[in-house]
Amino acid sequence: MDKKIATLEDLIKIVKEIRNDADVDLLERAYNFADTAHKGQLRMSGIPYIVHPLCTAINLAKMHVPDNIIAAGLLHDVVEDTPYTLDQIKEEFGEDIASMVNGICKVGKIKYRGVERYIENLRKMFVAMASDVRVIIIKFADRLHNLETLDCVPQKKAYRIALESMEIYAPIANRLGMGDIKGKLEDAAFRYVMPKEYEWVKKLAEESIQLKQPQVHKIIQETQTELAQANIPCINVHGRQKHLFSLYRKLLKYNRDITKIYDLTAIRCVMPSTADCYAGMGIIHSRWTPLKGRIKDYISQPKPNGYQSLHTTVFYDRGAIVEFQFRTLEMHEAAEFGIAAHWAYDENKLRQIGHERIKEMIDENQLEWMNQIADSNANSANTNSFLEALEEMKLDAFNDHIFVYTPKGDVIDLPEDSTPIDFAYKIHTDIGNTCTAAKVNDAIHPLDQPLKSGDIVEIHTDKSRKGPNPDWLKFAKTRHARTKIRQYARQGITSWLKDVIPNPIKKRK
Ligand code: MN
Image (cartoon, rainbow, N blue to C red; front, side, top):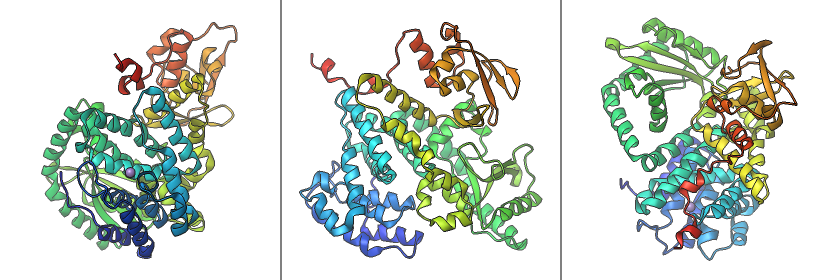
């Protein structure tokens, strides 16, 4: 597990590979400042403390964020853990970097001392995040390094940190469209949350990848040759391996049968334009036979989360099956780095390339869920609604989403397989509680039948109805609807947190 200890040179090298106009001077200054401040401090593993902010900064660089966020990552623990003050950082590095460091301090170190303290901590995190989304991005990078060094932490604590990463941090990253960091957080946490399942998937993936690995390089070369011969420009072709936790989720869908999974390794072609994506797929199809029904055009019909790419699966040599993905550079950046990719382009360029996905993400409405979660006061009724909001978000980690419409044309976002009941409760609790029937695309639709993306859903209500039917629990998909149905039956809401966080009052015997 012990890798070579990272250095400042590593950071500079990574940053320069991504942007050759990187502000090396700023990064060096931030590093030296942090190095002096943390002098003499050690991590639990015994290595110098500076390695942690440095690895945090490296993680940030790999998320393609600009230099000022990387600098704030280098400084993120200075104010909390050393005698240096925020004013000194402001003097050295200016208002903007200081305000990010301050945001990190406000989020604070998560303390697992009883459910209430813990919830308060989480709430603080959402408040800080709602005021500056860059703060949570630094938190992701910080958390990823902490997950990578969890072996030095007592087992119970390690489990809690990993579980929280999987259930809270990864879904937030997902909501921000940051697929790469989401996958990394999940994989790092997976090992501690479900050690047995992790080992199983890891072994399974290694065994099947070993079969394909020598071929990947060959396929990449052949693909490049085919495209060049057809005069189709291409930015790069690379292999991508599926993240382990994402593979695990898919295995559960397919009866744990890895032979049903074709995208363990995919060949990704990053192309200059959308037209080049389609042309490239044509060339691949003329060379290798495509599998029937496996062409997915997420360029003209993006996934509900905005994902865009052109997928196809072909028979390669001797029946080996390979998935190809074609996408423009902007689609690639949006899928991997999400909101962080926004800072890589200025507003004008975004408009020029018509980068809808990223524009949508920076649109304030898209970030409103964050404000909604942050925006609850500390009384107990709101604690429940805060927990419910968290539950809803947790579901994001496990479900794809569909978008459906109200008759007035408002878009409602629901997890896959949601029913009209879920829709009704998402609109308003009273609508759910008094729901009697549903019309979908103008036809009567049974309440227990799943909705599809694009459906127009109309709910019929009867004010005299005496609350929800407990049978709805058999098919309601969202935690929100289920909670409301149960609440009506006065069964109270479940609190998953109580299983994980020790209660100090109970502990004192
Ligand atoms: Mn830290």
